[in-house]
Amino acid sequence: SIKRNVIKSRNYLKILATMTIKRYATLAAASLACISSTNAFSGPPSLLTFLVQSTSHKTTNTLVGNSPYSTSLFSTPPERNDDTSPPPPPLSTLVSRVAVAGATGRTGKFVVQSLLSQKVPVLALVRDPSKASTVLDDPTDELLTIRKTDLGSRNDVLAALDENQCDAAIWCATGFSDAPDQSIWTKLQALFGLAVTPKGTIDAVGLPALAEGLKSTPKRVLDGKSLPKIVMLSSAGVTRPSWSEEKKLALEGCAGIPIVRLNPFGILDVKRESEETLRTCGVDYTIFRPCGLNDSWPSNQRPIFSQGDIAVGRINRKDVAQILVSILSAPDA
Image (cartoon, rainbow, N blue to C red; front, side, top):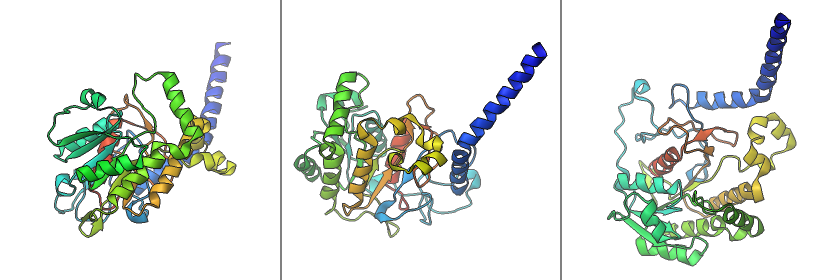
């Protein structure tokens, strides 16, 4: 009897393994293709991130290009690097002041921290200056300017940029507060607002206003190549709700994750529309689509970049912030 139960258990495990392999074979192949095509990264990855839509309206497979400069994030590991290219110039020499939208959010605060650590002047666009004084590491830093700004007001955003002479911006506002102490009801109200008036969300108003305000500033260039003026934090999965049923079935591991299946109040659609708006604004930009943000995930990991919208995985917000900041000095981004 025991022997029969063991045999049944083994057969069950074989069936389960076969079902799992079939379900995720396509996704695994896509992930391996992504890994093999990104020569900059070696070793088994601990996280999977996602990059899409390069600056100057072009698409590249990776952020490792032909520029003689490379940031530490997008460079070849030392053990595989036989290049004698000079180190990249400090970011503080490539930008005058960076506006950060969503500076007190769970990602934005790390963006501000990273910029200040590199001696880059920062304009923190916030809804609540008193919150900024408690959330940001050093609100008294002489390189930091905190300004109460309504990201849903075009005029207020334009005024903030003009007053502080910014020449670049990082958009990491979520469209609603991601404060951990916020009530569920408040979050539901915010999400419901996204569903009812998507054209009035801060993504739809504030992001184009940032582009408008930066359009007249001098072009950012390194080694003859354009650097982005705007870096937008979007989300993996924004195109998946609109996939055909055939594509969803073929890439079930990508289309079947909860955020895509549920797409609460069309939030992914709002992000996709915001991306499309940015593409038509006439400024150099980069859109970054990370996978699931998870503060419990290990940080300071080596990311994998790909084009398209099939990546799945987790990433720590600290790594997201590092990527957003590093893109500002990456000509091939």
